[in-house]
Length: 324
Length: 166
Image (tube, rainbow over all chains, first blue to last red; front, top):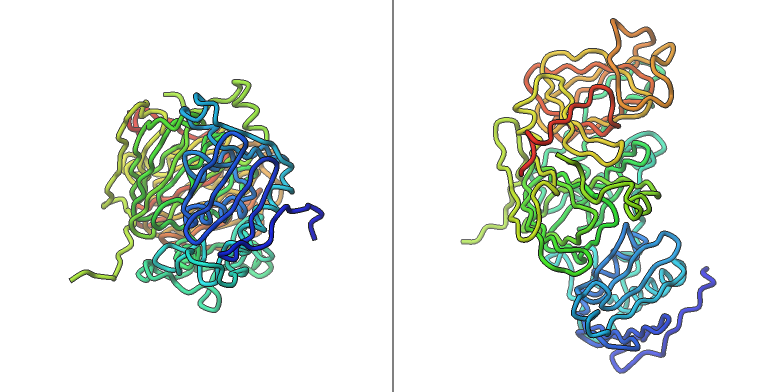
């Protein structure tokens, strides 16, 4: 049980509680989420807000910035979190409508979790593609706790190693409709007696074909701070991810187009189209959002070294991947 | 009539469709954009070509063809087969051949000394564990492609200008 006190009101006419954290105030109605802060206010579709909120909660604020849209979001300082409005929007800053507050991670996490729980109706799964879930709209209608509190998969060494995360089967993870043609054969293992636990391999592609979520990286192999975080993508990444370090993508199947903008201003910088076998870095000074017309397999490769943001801030590490 | 059946597109050495970058206000070099199959297509067998690099960590593309040398590493490595089929043999070395802080794999001179741990046959999409301080050798009867999660080592090849969009 968290000791954090969550500031909320009784349900409104539509059945939803309102929440407050610092000087920010959040409320929702049938279609929209409304955010107020001392110098301004903002409205987002409940669909957009809940999908972004789900990722922010599940990833524990991720690496760097999670932009819900061009105005609202969070910046992770790994122990504390900034919640902001207009901070990475040049026009808001110029008009002095922007506002940022820093919170202990526990406090913002618990408030966001409570908001996600109260505002997610039964039948709506914020992790699912739009084709695979009900709509998030309407008056309060139950809840979907199981969908929004999925355990985040994070292998300690590699999926399939004894004692670590295990492969997925029909019993818990049926093959996704868009990956019905993905081969399900597993590697052939021929361990000598006594080495059964050390000769380990599994089918990553079969594993991913059974993913029940979209835009939700999970760790499958770990080489010190080098993490393979593959994910399956369909429709639109619900956030603009602002990098605080270089991040790499390996497109394992199909195609994704990335809209790349300047991290601090939102000014467009590039469109990156990745097809199967393509490798590309996302620099440490951009924000990006992906579009995947068919469910695809993306390998997100992260360097989880905690000192990286400081190395970049002090110029000891570059925001660009390689120099050539 | 619209179709609701789907075809998952994977690339291969012989068939891939590389994407690209539409620059608006940036330099394409900032994205270090390459293609695994294109790199493997222009690599010598068993050459370890970096296609991703983040501080000391790398992703290496290996064109697997024939039989590799025996190699060992002080840390775990993880090969992912992107095309073809490979067999990996593992040997538990009697004594580690590299110091614990050595980054990346090194070639072993001659046959490894130690207990045979077994072998694995991997095809497209399969990922394996190469445990620290084991010796491993890879065989591919036809040209195959492996993406290796590892750390920059003595034999990592960097040729970014050749492989990346600019």
